[in-house]
Amino acid sequence: MTTARRMQEESASQAVDPLERRLTQALESLPRVAIADDFAARVMLRVPARRTVRYLNPARASMGRRISFIAIAVLFVALFGFAFQTGAANATIRDVAVWAIAAEFIILTVWVTLRPNQSR
Image (cartoon, rainbow, N blue to C red; front, side, top):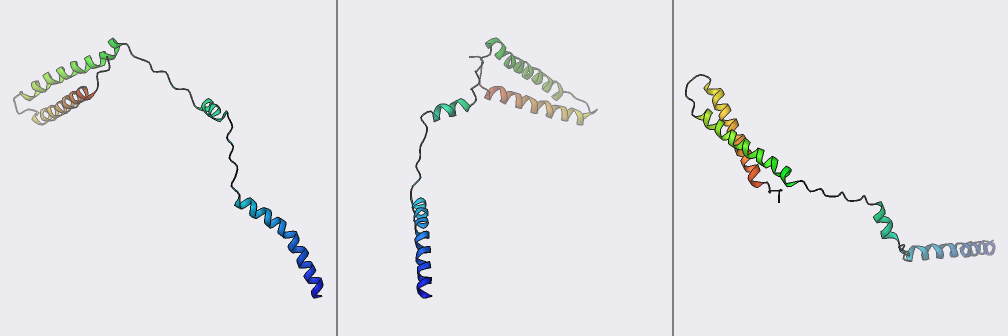
């Protein structure tokens, strides 16, 4: 029995050895990297097209800036109109209105100052 068993083990090891060898070679070898010649062109076809940039008419672009300056002037007049009112009637409402107008005036002035002039 020992010879028969030994023969079976040898035949089994011979049958497994080619499989193990192929697996070992497949795992140890580096994969082949092949990039198609038209790969970049195919990728560019899938990328959405860029939007075209529209330039505004300079007269229309500066209209918002003009309105901002008019609003600053109106707020300035209203601020001093409320600030120099005298009388005890509704003093709290007047103070709240003065602070609200002052905040709007400051915010609008800073926004107009820091915003680049787009009419050029």
